[in-house]
Length: 410
Length: 64
Image (tube, rainbow over all chains, first blue to last red; front, side):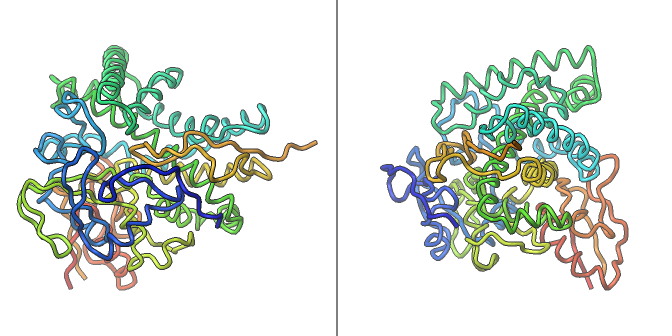
């Protein structure tokens, strides 16, 4: 492992959650104490008291429990970033409870099944090859985020949804603003409205000229009067898919690259043992736990979690990195290793809101990571690990950029 | 061993089909759990138990 690096000092109160990572390659060191302590009273950035939950079993319990709401409109739901009221009042299904959540999620399940994802694989392999061809044409050095980590998931989700990739700059900028904790409520709200307007217009085009994509199916089969959903609901569904399909996988590709560059043994496994690729990817997902602070909940009735009673109306944050580094479940959690067949990590969350795109994300990572090391000989970082531009302010952890070099044949 | 799957709570994560593909599939139409057998073979038991633990919506139940 590289020397642990420290992020620049900040002046957050010791009991504030989310915490800034000390070393970007691991969860905040304080999580170990939180796990030992069990559910702990802390504060959200806006001062709201919250239960921080870190043990694997407690995180699973809370996220599987019908006694907790994920809905923005339930009083007391903890906010990881300041939000405009209008955004809070109009959540996507990630922030809705049954039965609303059930109806929307069910509509989209068929688009993300294992079977569907297997059918998408050749297209992902083709897109990966195309991006790597372009990197080789443009030559070393390059920014891996700009040239591969972000465009690949972006191309994939655009194709799936039926969004023209040529507009990627427009929606990537806005999705980035929505997902940054540095954005003011006004900035988030503006970005969100612009994304909404863009997709509103696109939905109209899909209604007139449907094609073989998710947005067209929503437009022709699920939009009133033919279907059950009003226009706004459908647009918000698309907003979530577009934003979630980008940022998360892009961050995983970039961070995984940093980790794998220090582990030639795992690169060799990816190269030589295709049947172990899913284990390597599962471990990278566990290790980086980029969506650590996403799952916030509020109790709708008094509930016992990990030996404490969380009272009705009290908020909780189920810290995925806490669960994924729980030594009771994962032996030597700080060591990236092949944990054969172990899918117990909670990188995609747990419960009814577990990531809908998980199968797609896993497949993309299984395709892109081996291909990248195969096609870019002598791949290495072009900056010290400590000086990389990490997304300390992201709702999802990751890298803004990743300068890399590789060997160019003479 | 008997296994049952509750399609009403299933959220289509596909963890069961990923873990024990001989026993679980995702329905071609709606993507929710589809049982290929409700009486798994002895050699499938561990995988079925693992699938039950991994299911995010706790849609699977095992008896016997």
